[in-house]
Amino acid sequence: MHAQRNLRLLFGYWFLRDFQLWIPVWIVFLTVDRGFSLTQVTLAESIFLIGMLVLEVPTGAVADKYGRSVSMALGALVLGIAILIFAFTSSFPVLVASFLMWSLASALMSGADMALLYDTLKAAGRENSYERFAGRGMASTWAGVVLATFLGGPVAALFDTRLTMFLGAGTCVATAAIAISIWEPPHRAEGEKQPYFRTIQSAFAEVWRNVDVRITVMLVSSAFAALEASHYFIQPYLLDRGISVGVMFSFLQVPILLAGLGGALLSGRISRNMSARALLVGPLIGAFAYLVLTLMPGLTGYLAFPLVMGVSSCVEPIATGFINRRIGSERRATVLSIASMSRSVVLAVLAPGLGYTTDEWGLAQAFAIGGAVAATAALAFGLPLFWRTRGQVERTGLPEVSAAN
Image 1 (tube, rainbow, N blue to C red):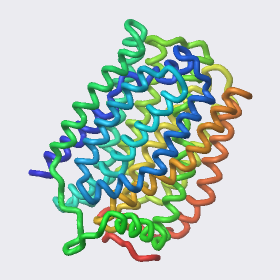
Image 2 (tube, rainbow, N blue to C red):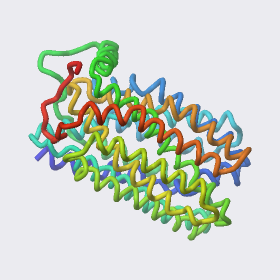
Image 3 (spheres, rainbow, N blue to C red):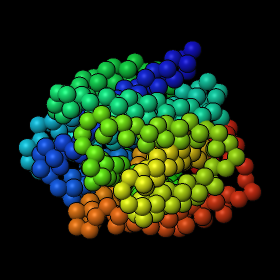
C-alpha cells in the first residue's frame, strides 16, 4: 500500500516540479527583455553547474542521512525562491545569485527522487521494474514540461513573461507539499549508521572500486552532458529562424518535448536486454542529430531536436538503473549525485563555450562541437562499457553489487 501511494505521489511530484510556464521563454526573457548575450546566459549557467558540482554530493548525503522526501521538499522550496529572484533579474550579479540558489535546489532534488523510487520498489519486492517506473516518472516530468511549454508562450504573449515566473514559484510550493507527504522506505543496511562525511567518502570509494559504475559515470558526465546542451539552443534556433514569442513559438517546442516523453516511456523496454548497448548507441544517435542541425539550413533541421531529446530521455533511466544495481542502498542517493556532479563539471565548461561559439560564429558551429563531444564520449566510454558487459543479459532484478569487477 505504501509503495502504490508513493508511486502516485512521485508521479505527481515529477509532473508539478517541471510544470513551469517560464520554460519556453526564459532564454528570450534574458536575451530580449533583459539584454543579456547568450554568452552571459551560458556563463551564468556555468556558474549554476559549478554550484551543482560543489553541492551535489553533500546534498546527496543529506538525502541519505536525513531522508529523500525531506531533501526533495526543501529543494522545491528553494527552487521557488530562485525563480522569484530570477523574475527580478536586473544585472549579471542578480542573475548569478538566482542561478546559485537554483543550483542548491537542483542538488537537493537530484538523485534523491531516483533513490526514493528504487527503495520504494525494493521494499515492495519490485525493484526489477525500476527502469519501467523510472521511465514513467521521466514521462511525468516531460508531461509537465510539455503542458507548461504549450501554455507558457501564449501566457507570456498575452500578459507578461514575468507572470509565468510568479506562477512557477507558486507551483514549487505545491511540489514541496507533495514531496514531504511521501513515505520514506528503509534504505540503510541493518546496523550501519555512518557519519555524514563518511557517507560521502564511502560513496566516492564505491564508484572508484566498481569499474562498470566508474565508466558509466564518465559516460554520463560527457556524452549525456553534450546531449543535454541541446536545451540551450532550441529557443535561439527558433528566433534565428524568424519565429517570435507566441503560440507558434510554444507550439514548435512541444514536439521536441513530446519526443522526450516518448523516449522516457521506451527506456524500460529497451533496458530489458540491451542496457550497455543503449548507452553506446544513444549518444551516437545524438551525435548524428547534431550533424543534421549543423548541415541543414532554415527549419529543415528542426526534426533533429526531437531525435536528440528522445534519445537523451531514453538513456538516462537506463544509466541510473545500471548504476543502481551495482551500488549499496545505503549510499544510493550519494552515488547518483556523483554521476550528476560529474555531468555538471563537463557542462560548466561546455555550456559557455557553446554560447560563445554561437555569439561569435553561429549556431551551426555550436552544433558541430556538441556532436563531436557526444560521439567522442560514446566511443571513449560507451564502447568499453559495452565490451566489458558483452554476453551478459542486463536483466532487472540482478543482485546489487558493490565490489570491484
